[in-house]
Amino acid sequence: MVFESKLLCKIIGSINLINSQLYKSKYLTIFKRLGSHSVFALIALIVIGGATRVMEAGLACPDWPLCYGSFLPFSHMNLRVFLEWFHRLDAFLVGVLILFKFVLSIIWKKEIPNWLPKTYSLLLFLVIVQGSFGALTVINLLDSYTVTAHLLIAFLLLITTISINQNLEKDEINAPLNWWILLLLFPLILTLIQSFIGVRLSSTWSAHICLSFNKQCLILDTHKLFAFPISFSILMIIATSICKGNLFIKNWKYLSTLIFLLTSQILLGVLSLKTNLNQPIFIIGHQLNASLLIAILTTLIFRNPFASKDLNHSLNSQMVGMNS
Image (cartoon, rainbow, N blue to C red; front, top):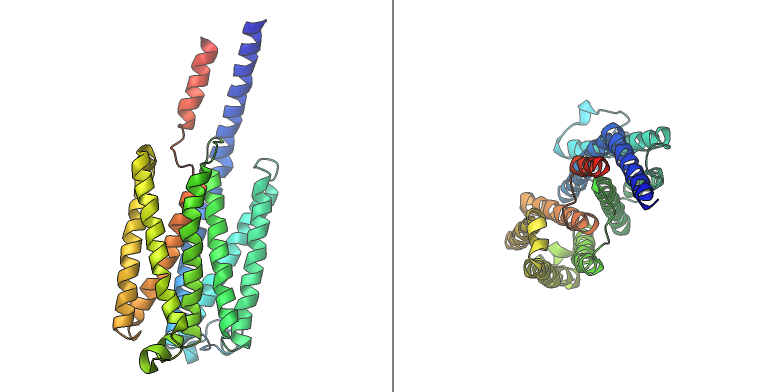
């Protein structure tokens, strides 16, 4: 009787693994590829938005959603118009991509995890809100709070998309390392706050006023001050993972990238101030680095910190166990 019960458990386990394998081969690969494209498109969207802000091109297209009343304003095209037009085009493509994933999740609802359609519906809602704030930035003539909220929604879209991708990557349910997640949350939240302060700096001209007339320096000083706790918290993450040994080995690519991004972010920030914010390439690079920092930290938070077993290897092990 005991032998039969064990055999039944192994058969059920094998069936679950086979179903999981079928799900992965038929649907999971599609969602993972679309998710990867979404992450790249969102980072590009944030960086192009930063470039549009730095180049003072936010109102280069006076109307919305078209630009000078047309989809492609050839007669008015210049660098600023192109930046604003391309920013809107990228936002439109991101919206279409997320809508496509949502539709697929509804069509394949019975074959995919229950959380996936719900999360894609949240993404779709955020896209609608993001588009609304995009319109308001033009209507409100680049109001600082509207621009900041616009960036906030973009970061929420990026974080949510990465969390979905990492959950799709997991082959098995593992107990999360809560202390590790909390350790990573600290620099993520600080980086988000610093990014919002950076938007306030550029959208209120506070940095230029401070550097030129030594007035209204509170926002700039606060932005610089946040570099210290962010640097310290990231160094703490690296040091803790090294002390744990296996934790660093399993995540060394992400952790090494964190160190590189932190170093280059500080360097770009210093160069931006040394050039009195007159070199757009440094400011745009600073925005790109911030987006990548947020992406890497989010990935580390939601991914399994320890490599899971290969599914084929697990399936073969179950078959061997059944045969024995």
